[in-house]
Length: 105
DNA sequence: AACCTGACTTCGG
DNA sequence: TCCGAAGCCAGGT
Image: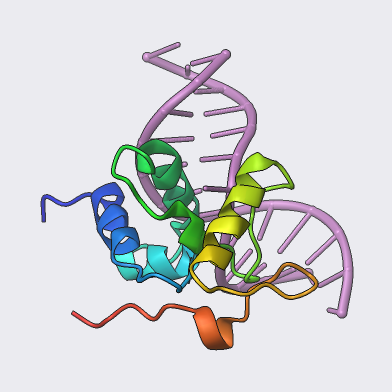
């Protein structure tokens, strides 16, 4: 409808529960664009603070934070650990426990 | 206004 | 199994 991909992604990200994580492709696919994973990243850049999105709950397909080891990276990791998400020695997240599965409409 | 890049993912060789 | 290219859309230069 009138909802854009951008808008839809925002809604989905906002729906991610505390202590869970989602992948770009997962969100993109759920928003209607299986190949629009990049746009999901731009939505976060564009409206993360604006829409107060839990951007830290979005990780790449490897269960690993996409950012390099900069301040944002450490902040994302810290926020996730704060919510109960545990990282292994390789700093990757166990999807078996923390991967969020979008509720069906 | 046009070109390039970007917090990605998936397919093909 | 590893490497390269394509696809998606918006924002920045």
